[in-house]
Amino acid sequence: MNINLFGRSLLVSASILALSGGIAQAADCPIKIGGMAPLSAPGTVVGGEAMRDAMLIAEEDINAAGGVLGCDIDVVIGDTEGLPEKGTALMEKFITQDGVAAVGGGYHSSVGVAAKDVADARGVPVVFAETWNDTITGDKQKYVFRIAPLSSWASSTIWKHALEIPDVEKVVILTENTDYGIPAAEETTKGLESGGREVVTFSVDIGTQDYAGIVQRIKAENPDMIIVLATGEAGYNFQQQASDAGIGSQDIIFHAGQVSLESKAYWENVPDGLYAFVQRIGVPENLFTDEGKAFAAKYKERTGKAAVESYAMEAYDSIAIIAQAINEAGSTDGDAMVSALEAIEHNGTLGKIYFPYGSGKDPSEDGRGDEWWHQWPDVALTVIQYQEEGENSGEATIVWPDAYKTGDAIYVNQ
Image 1 (cartoon, rainbow, N blue to C red):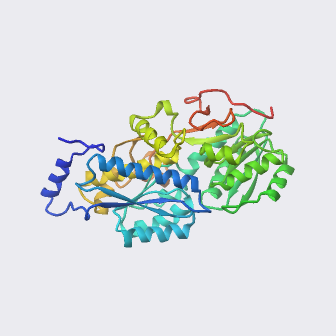
Image 2 (cartoon, helix red, strand yellow):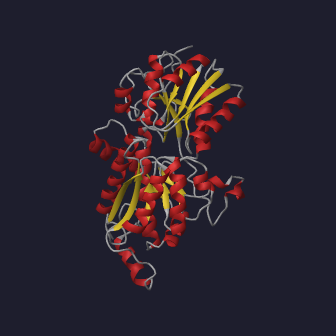
Image 3 (cartoon, helix red, strand yellow):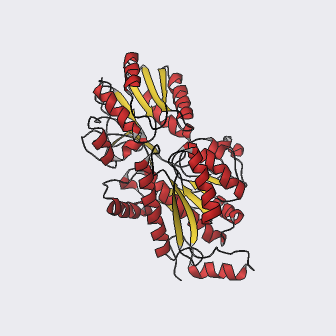
């Protein structure tokens, strides 16, 4: 029996189709799956390109392993531009024009918040890869799943790490005015203030390029630490402009945005980016699953990068999970896929992925909020620090939490 990577044989899939009396029916081959990614400004283009490459590798791996229900899959990549209205239009296009069975990917929370309603209303499952806003799953929509961390959960990584840094009394947060930045800043502020820290927040529009005025206002606050809660390459501009003004990562404690995990682009745009802290999803590469190691090798070969970003791994897993769900449902029917997703155990690049809460068990039964609906609960969150110029994020020192720590942090202004 020819077992494929997703735990199903082509023979078993064919048998399901034959015995189901027409219930388990695949779409015309190939089976199409939508893949959302920001590929144009003001979206995070480097992140979108990473996700696109990852989703196309997933397509190749799935098809090489026998495909889905006897068909190849075709991952239809669409550009969200990081804008809610573009995400909504793209989701409509995926469903009404491309005829996708499900949708994976997704980077910006604001896009996910808008696009999820379209998918849920049309009964098309979505496995979001990198959208953090709590309401994406907190609405408890039937067709919406997520493998990225909750924003409130991810924010706690940043503020808990900050509270452990000695002599930090005043923190400035730079955030974007989006469905990611606003709640992330609120949660981070709440956490920092619970530890007695003073917090001042400055908000900017997504895609802002010139930070001269903001930098001077931040400098006047005389902070002990700066935390950046902004997505996209514009974060590079802020960090370097802050460095030019004497408040960069070599001057004070500086937590950079997640786009800084794109090491090559980071060092090209932020030559003075040494000693910055960055949040990373997932375990260090030496602890990758077998699936993670296999994907990392292919991804590095394709992209020429020295490290694999967490959002690339999430994007790959989102497509692979959908493929497994279709196989296990024996159908591209949305309701059948939801049942399969709620019961799924997927050995992914990020670990064993499953969704403990849904129609069979409400999060409230374990004292959890609605945001845990269709949410993967085991996402690993770490903080790295660039301690050598030009190093890649996969080799950077993990400074928090202790469970994954590989070295001590360097505090430049202490």
